[in-house]
Image (cartoon, rainbow, N blue to C red; front, side, top):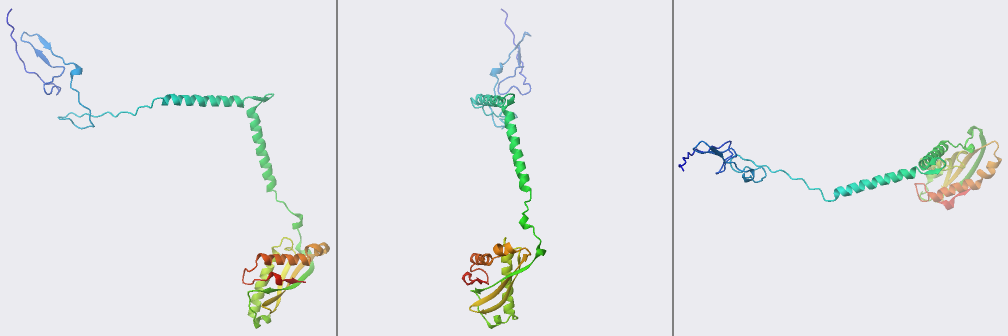
Length: 267
């Protein structure tokens, strides 16, 4: 056998794929007899770069970490499917119930709509009736026909006033101011009365006397021509007196001109 002559050629690095003694898949060794034998490196034997968070591992090689997705909890898909299936069953059951025939060709959903429309109609009619202004015939009156006078006089005592000589003179400032205040109080009382307000004309304080302070008053009312029933019931002395006394009990101790209820007299 003739001895074989070998020639050694330097290995070439292509595209930086050979490093630290490792060669790329394209590295070749050529024999001296012209026959070439290629040495290929298996992909599984190729050095793998470790994962990192984007930092450079020597040289110019950068390795980036691929984020992992959160795994789907086991059984969640099955539960969602079961829930959807139950909802579909409920909807189908409701449809069957609404389409049930109550009588003849009338179905349940028709009955429900009819009842709803009936309730709306009742509510609408009730609101319409309530919106109609109720006019009381007794409240319609012509005050120009009230020409018959009816007066009541009386006295009461003021508990928070001190008597002075000026109150004896109707023309004094103190007497006029106190009289005006009491007259306004009586006017508001009888004008706001549902039973007596339409007949009330005016209130008058015409004198003061000593006894703490005792005031003399007169109430003026006007009645229609046909006033027999009114004078007997509505404008009786008892009713006019009771309206005044009830007002005093409700307002006892209030205001600058406090009137003692027990001191009230009327004739």
